[in-house]
Image (tube, rainbow, N blue to C red):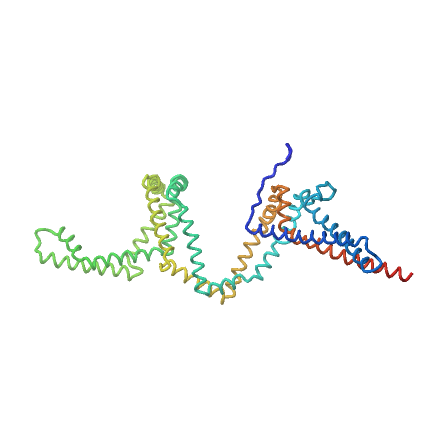
Length: 429
């Protein structure tokens, strides 16, 4: 290209199918050109023969066939290049109007495809919910879905480096958490937990774990009390006191677990309520909580712990997703089975899912539809004009050669008809 002109870059990539298209285009060009050459040979051979009989019809048909073939050759060629290299006006249309073609194609796609009404209509006719439910009803299909999800999860987990996790936490997350006051949030959260008694389950678990440990380790309990027993008391007294104390401890723990309104539980509730209130209102408690939070978050060991924890979690997850017999796969298959049943049998659930999917598609179409359509014109503008013309011809040129073939045949038939009518007029006059 000359200096100062816009230099285009090749963004078009060859595909294995392009060679097949190129071979098909050459074949059809050969057929169309062969018919033109055949018509020319027939015309030349019959030019000096007696035109009063059959040869007149043949010669006229051959002449008209040549005219039709040449006219359609010119029309087809003019779409992509200058015929015979001559700069004839209104030829090489693809090269001259490439950018305009891209803009027109963008407008066509934007007006006729990327609209909310069309997107919702296509989704409604697709019946995605029912088809997905039927597909997931097959155990082999569920395994295919799980394998694909496992493959994606594996790639995602492997791409997250532990050093990056540590850097993200220490450079982004932890400094931000250190700056934000946490005690009012923790206090409000704790107050909500106490109000809903969501902590009672944790208390029951702790109590029963302690009860079970005492029940299984009475010797440890006895050893602790014997160590602290007075030296002057008889051993049989110590044994009876320790045994009674041990039974009382087990009974006390059982009572705490079984009685929702046990005084110990109420005392814990009161303690937690006071702590929640102090975390939100007491400046001294709030200051101490923030200082503790800052010491914890800024400790050098936090980053190492987070890195080590991530390595362990990732290794565990990778083992689970790589083992089809693991609990993760079994749970996944169960969830997909439940999803399949609900999609097939629950019309309300299926309709809600498809409606939300329609809302998502409509949002993207309305928000980004114009930008998506602009990709067409932007891409076409970046194409080299010569290469774009060649590639477009590669895709549609084979079919356009039928225009040349049809032009040759129709021209020959039109020539025969015209010659026949001319002969009839001559005979009638």
